[in-house]
Amino acid sequence: MSDVMAEPRWIERLLATTRGRVLTLLRREARTVGELARALDVTDNAVRSHLSALERDGMVEAASVRREGAGKPARIYRLVPEAEEFFPKGYAEVLSAIVTELEEREGREGAEGLLRAAGRRAGAGAAARRGPTSSREEALSSALEILEELGGAVETRTLEDGSVLLEGHGCPLSAVVGRHPALCGLVETLLEEVTGAPVEERCRRDGNRPCCAFVVRGREPT
Image 1 (cartoon, rainbow, N blue to C red):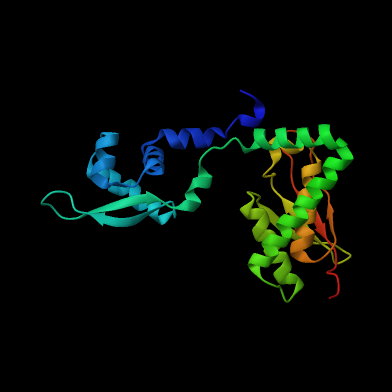
Image 2 (cartoon, rainbow, N blue to C red):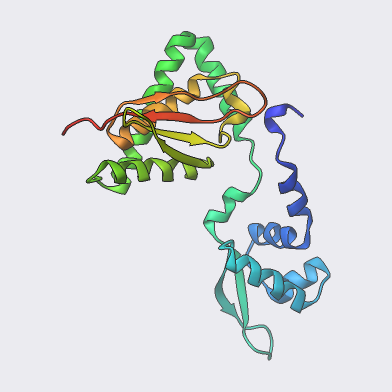
């Protein structure tokens, strides 16, 4: 298996547990406690315990009620749409193939231009969904939220010249950026659209753990 397809081992371990198997079953279809217990060969109470924890974590929800025979109506549980992002996916390999194809067809400079244009488009869409921001602080908050939605863990630091450094602990595109650093330019232009300010990419791509870093300059006057 290629390195870009390798999934975090903790996800593999979690999905192998009973709680992980509950998630996998609900991903296929909504089920009652009894149906889950039979599929997993565990007690109803054990399933209820796992479902309660997964509900608290916002992973599953009670969708409806089904009557089973003469007994009490049974609640049907399902996976919430947001939980789908938890499951392993092969985005890295697909993304790497797309960028490689762009570079072969358009050249490295042409591919970089297209990726930056894609970042501007994505940023404009994100900004439109969130609505206008009335201050630099609101714009930076939106930028942070977007980076976190992409999978980044980001902190902010104000620099001596008043610029703000968005510094990530890791990189959501870490499996790809080492070979395709132009992807950092995509995120750079995305952040420019969201913040309405010039952004300078300073990502660290050396070593085995790339980290995002973007400097947001003063906001452009409107």
